[in-house]
Length: 187
Image (cartoon, rainbow, N blue to C red; front, top):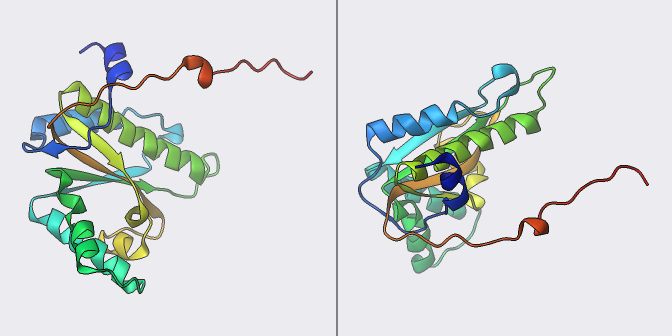
């Protein structure tokens, strides 16, 4: 697939089925992530792979997090929350691992981690896979972060759901003029 064609046509795919990416496909995706812009070469990211039975355990962790907050979930809402990780055969948790650096502020490191996650999505699409980046309240929940083994300097920047696309969405069109303007300097 041509790189420009890929960039113009990648879409999020919410309905994903087996098979999950192969080891070779995953390696290609992670190689793409390693090429993300990275001031000072800090590599402020890491990725957790969640597949198989571990997806069910992630659902359990989601329900536990809500219940610890005191939210009294109805059984149907708890079941729905617990099934969220089952929406794809593989979940890649993208984690920003920031560190103190004299020239690279934390926000830049988080953006870099986001670029790495985006590169994963692009590489998945380039290989014919479907993927969807999701966040939501579970990405920011301290119980979920602890359950995933994150340290104090780390944060979830996204749950990347990856698998085989059951169906691809059409690319939505946005006019370039809606998002691009020319700054003409001071008046």
